[in-house]
Image 1 (cartoon, rainbow, N blue to C red):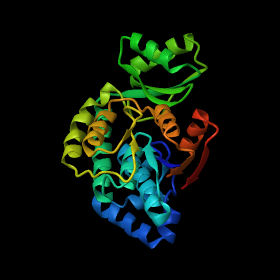
Image 2: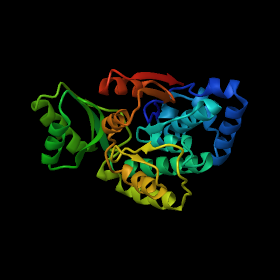
Image 3: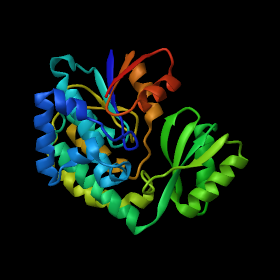
Length: 292
C-alpha cells in the first residue's frame, strides 16, 4: 500500500518548485493563484530569494506547503494514496492532497498559522534542540523534571527527539540529557519553541481560523501528529490540527501505525528527503522514494 508523506519547516531551499513552475502549466496557475491569495510574490522568494528570506516562518511555511501540494496535484491520476501523513506543517499539505481541504483554504490556514507562530516567537524568545541517542521515555522523564518550560516536541525516529521550550529550559535539559547518556544535544537554529506550551497564543489565534474553515472527508485516512492515529472525520481532524501547535509531533508513531495498517511504500512529496531518511530509521524494510 502507498503512503504519501509531506515535509515540514526546515526542508526549504532556494529554487524549490521552479522546475515545476517552468514546465507544468497547471502548476504555474496554482503558484500564481497563491501569489494573489498571499498578497506578495512568494514565487520570487522561493525561486530566486535568499536563504534568509526563506527562513522567515511567514515565508517558509507557505513555501513548503505550496511545493508539496502542487507536486501532488501535478501527478494527476497517478496520485492514488492509500494513506497520507505530514510532519508538523506537512499535515496541512497532506490534508489538501487528500481532499480534506481545498487548495485555497489550506493556503490561507497555513499563512495564518505561520503569522501566528512568528508573532508568538517574537513575543517570547525560545528555542529547540535535537537529542540523539536516548529512548523516548528517558527524554520525557528528564524534561518533566526541569523547572523551566521544556517538552519533547518531535518524536522523529527511535533515538532522535527534538525538545522545545524556553531558552533556560532547553539549556538545562540539554545538560541533564547529556548527563543521562545522550550522544548529542544540538541547539537548532529555529525561530522559537514550536510544539510547546509557549505556542499557546498562536494556537488560540489559529483555532478560530480552523473552526471557520470548511473541511471535507478525505479520500483516505490521514495519520495525524498529535496521536499517531488515522482520521477521516472532519471534526476530529480539525480538533487535532488545533492541538498540534502545542502538542508533540509523533512521527515515529505515525509511521509505525501506517506500516501496521499495510503501508510498504512511502513516497515523500516536497523539498528535501528528510522524511525518507526518518522512515528508513523507523523500519528499513519498507520502500522509500521522493519527488521534489
